[in-house]
Image 1 (cartoon, one colour):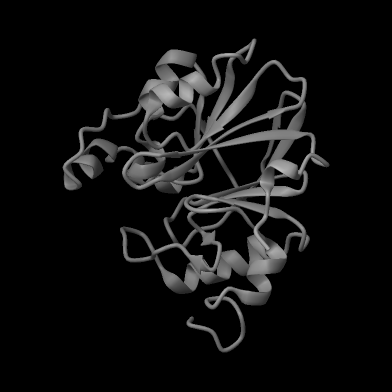
Image 2: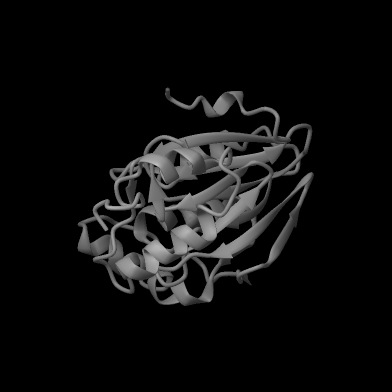
Length: 223
């Protein structure tokens, strides 16, 4: 059965998903119910759509959180940071990709404004205390060296580590399949089975579903 993420209101968070740009990467607008501000996760493109989505947040955006620094996840950082003044959070191992965002765009024939320097470094085991909720940070390299997972109450934002029925590609700079699989198993599949996984592309899934049926993760699967 498909998972209706909008019905996971047992968590105190409200999550709006925007599939943006030519790569249809998922950007997430997240805030606690009743809170006056929230966070933007992976503003990959279409900054105007993101800003329209947070326009009614009384105290605006408190942070821009990046699961990793590939073009399709950072392409609108410049727009959102400039309009909101929110600090950008990135794992330092992906800084080389982040600093090449405009170059990444040119490789695909796209004009991308180079984002501002990150304001804060993410690290494994870190706790981000935000208005009305907390995220714990798990370093999950393999798709990129500085990939991270943001874990909240009953949910996790996993970037391009794992998808519904698949895993992230590892043929880009800094990618490694064995490392990615180890990250998924240690940093994602160790979460409770009911944890809803908000992925970088495509629909939400759960730890339980991917553990049981993802062909890259089950015994005797692809990997």
